[in-house]
Length: 231
Ligand SMILES: C[S@@+](CC[C@H](N)C(=O)[O-])C[C@H]1O[C@@H](n2cnc3c(N)ncnc32)[C@H](O)[C@@H]1O
Image (cartoon, rainbow, N blue to C red):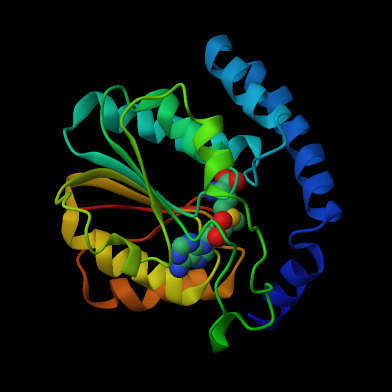
């Protein structure tokens, strides 16, 4: 765990992270382009070129593909906690159809870290303004913004059934808050997907603790992500 945190601390948030991600994603796009639908790859590449995303090409593809499947098959709203510049939110906008999408972020960057994350990130890291994200996603309908610390920022949100929830908050307490809030609100067959599960020890710990007494399995993907299907 310590080693994993130290590795991320060295990479996190700086030019090395974005350079590494861009290089890695270009290789992944070469692989995806030879096998996947050209229109989907065009959208993913466009988002990648905008340099807003902290997801690799494979991770973007997973968000897109799962979101598309959920949108086709199920009723229920979409949500994301951890929006930053709106790149993964745009992926959700592309696939959600007319479903509501609820976006939660401080829009002031990461909150103070708990003991589990102390070595990983800086408070205020990934700060990006709400107005800029609203402008970026202004072409998409039925998108709802909730500024503030999650889960407190969700107290007035009336939605009780979600088909897809994407978490990307980097920290133990935030991830645990996502699971406690969304788990009871996920429809049967609903998907909770998290970024950084196999990269950030606090994220993994939150999933491990939360699902210790639940019937669902946490599925560890070959990217940094994990997912859970609500039974
Ligand atoms: C890594 S960035 C998200 C990246 C984004 N999903 C993307 O695809 O580029 C993490 C975001 O989580 C937000 N965040 C972390 N903990 C939070 C919390 N408890 N409540 C609200 N926002 C939080 C930060 O403000 C930051 O914008």
